[in-house]
Image 1: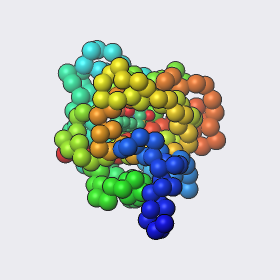
Image 2 (image 1 turned 30 degrees about the vertical axis):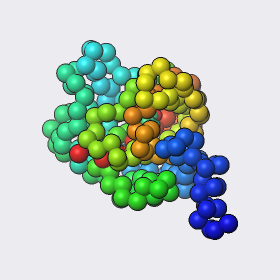
Image 3 (image 1 turned 90 degrees about the horizontal axis):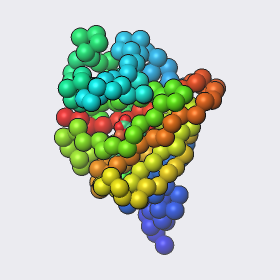
Image 4 (image 1 turned 60 degrees about the vertical axis):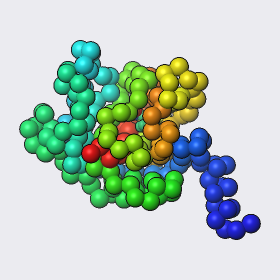
Length: 215
Ligand code: MD3
Ligand code: FE
């Protein structure tokens, strides 16, 4: 058996949970303090806010962004824009530690040329959830999405390209990273309600970073 074959074998056993989904358990563990410090800097400039959906409701997770563009909703629709509507300034730049982590996770999953231009940061408080949805506001579906979980655990659920495809559930914990590429880019997914708890590094919250190529 060649070294390469062995490596991909090991990957399929421990990390590849579907053809284009790579679960990198605790991949970010050594970087969480740096990531959380960077989140504090970002939110000092572009605060977390709960967004109104086009249907007129409020999302229960609070969001902010860093990078060349940011994702938000204004009640008319979801979009990426270069300016934070709250500050009328550019979104904070993506910190080097964010980009490095996203690229090394993507590379580990086989995506050699991932160049994210945005990191959406979701903050969940007790009772917050995210209903089943598809991510389809990006232009290039050949680029993966890298997601990083920090703080309290939550149950993540994902299905297939159709809303009622069968679903799997996995618990996402502090430091876990998932890379979604290829066919999985269009899969329905969401998270269940955050349960009360206290995390040593994030207190009552769970944070999720999603790195994307929007433009
Ligand atoms: C599967 N966030 O921000 S991250 C989102 O935990 C979002 O905050 C969730 O869904 C969270 O849009 C889930 C995991 C994730 C992110 C993007 C995906 C799974 C995905 C895109 C396609 C398929
Ligand atoms: Fe999503």
